Image 1 (tube, chains in turn yellow, purple):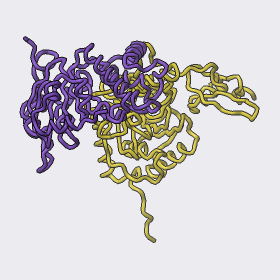
Image 2 (tube, one colour):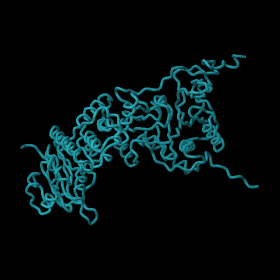
Image 3 (cartoon, chains in turn red, brown):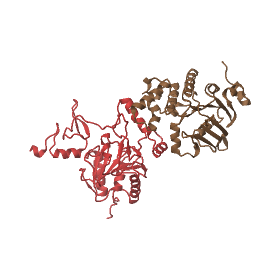
Image 4 (cartoon, chains in turn red, blue):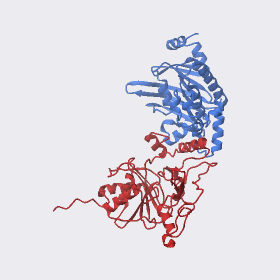
Length: 293
Length: 258
């Protein structure tokens, strides 16, 4: 009986991981700068997090604990399948608890709970170039980054205000990293932008289709762009989470019926569950089971 | 006069392989002076303009520019960052086709404001005020400020392009056939506008045109080009009223008389 072929640890071969790690090191050395890398074909379609998966595969070790979130949730297709993928190919421990994880791969959110030293947050990035929709030429945008010509980024914000009376960009809100590079923080809501500033955790961004890696090292200044008379503001919600009653967190709208019923609940499912376990109840929530029994 | 020339061009040549783009062009441009470069299609006018404005690198010769600090700098050896900064602050470039010089997908106000934001203006109210002021000066109504240039007529686009270039108060503006493709009444108004602005702001302008009427109306001095060579230059009125070279005589006599 011949042995079945097995995957190398974390799917990618060692040379590929080495190549990606070199790109990551360079990205960390130049915060916010997009480092090109030889992105590989992954067993999933582009747009599903091929960049993030490659970065995670390159940094994860057997001792790590992985958490994967998709729009804040641990139980959606993308999160579940990527978590299962690493369980299979790296045999690492997985968790849904933000606090217990050492590597967190995320799509479009930063966890509510503050990240701490030693944690790595890996973002899945669809379009790494913040200037892309304003300047279609890659040669030109590279030059603009090199020469720090970022006037165009404000043209976009100007257009927002001229059309809507306020800066209407709500996600992928451009930031300036350590006073130098303008960076697209991937499509996280601008609510999460302040969390990137001076974060204790290492933040890595991987764009598989666009073949770019960039990073924000711990304790790095990350400033959202704005105008003096239209300062940067995060989203505000009228009501707290309907299930756990949390204030000051990012909420998702959930349609309840076809008669206009809706509720707003925490987008970060782990955060919400933990609060409910601790006995917090929102207006539509049910009290903790043990307490109810 | 103690003033120094703004631009010193010395034996500038550009070759496309064996063919000549322009050859041995030398002249000085003084502050506030409007210089017209005329000639037929393919005579090297646009090549010369592109070499002067560093959009093309010349093969031979030098272009020196008087910086605001009073020093001459050779444009060919200037670092790219500085050159690009110069191009969007102290210079303007008006393209023949406004779509090349404008951002067609952002509003007129943002088109004018872009240069301000590029030099670090970060106050929305002030940017908007300045943009509105400039749109007024080029006769574009404030009600069109938030429209995209796609919705503008050819003449309006060209005026918008001019406003976009002049907002940082440049000292030198390059114009490549600024009235090309416009009908005559619109042309007349645009020329009138450019003439007024040049006079008010004391701009130095290098305008490339095949239309002698444009040269007559706008320029103080003109150069006639043929096959990449400057064959005649002098005061506009002198060249047009008393052309010396046979080719210039031909050009002048080719103007349609109505």
